[in-house]
Image (cartoon, rainbow, N blue to C red; front, side, top):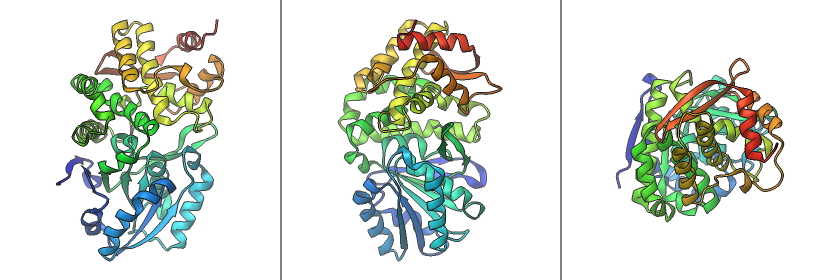
Length: 371
Ligand code: GLY
């Protein structure tokens, strides 16, 4: 099967996103022509590595490429200074040169971490994204955002560093557990919600088929998300304007992740799922859209089986005031003002640059059942 190809147009840093079945097993044909010498350093999620390193390595080694593999810690907990240091020192210890490539095999965490290591190593080496989760295939592997978390907040340390190639092998989604699939699905729905009403309508009709793993529908959804993202990134690589729309649901999501300690208690995509519903309800409360919009958004996440309310998060949540503190720390805040992506309608999102703290606090109190 010939993969679908989407170009991210960024001048001399332009690159292709290839989407298809079995791309890891045929990776050599895409990767080898790029390498200046026959070696590749791979940073891999340990669980993903146990299943998908062999098709990748069989293809590359049979083409004469020497592989060096580093397995990271699993989960969001890997996005720390200490793990970054271990990766960078490891890359130096295996004599990774300025012209060499680093590849990230796994989900969003590995992509962010390996991409950031590549950005700082010898002032920047090239890297390849090999995303194996839905979330990484539709969002995080594209666009060059790389980084780690700080105790002060999510992704507060990082760099824009574009990959040189993204290989999204859809067959890897067959081993993705339901929880991670649904976490990724939140990012898929996000693309329809922020800018493509027809795509959102298509998702409403095809949600069962997507959940059952129908390859043709998955390919269509991934392609559409990547097309939308590629166009936005080409227009606004470093998020000065339009790219902010991609943060739909993320002001709430990042505060929720901080409140739950970046732990397994709440995956990033689960936080985005709840965050998109909250953004719709907040838009409705602020008078930007009618309740029909927020109920449609909530219904879709519920039909998908994705998280759609704070009540679904296990354990206690902090009070509304604390959430507000987390939101002020978010890198989307500007001059201390809160910034949200809100809705005028499905497929019609906009960036609200100066949302009042009081309105936000009242909304959060209502959601958390505080007086
Ligand atoms: N995940 C949002 C962005 O790449 O801008």
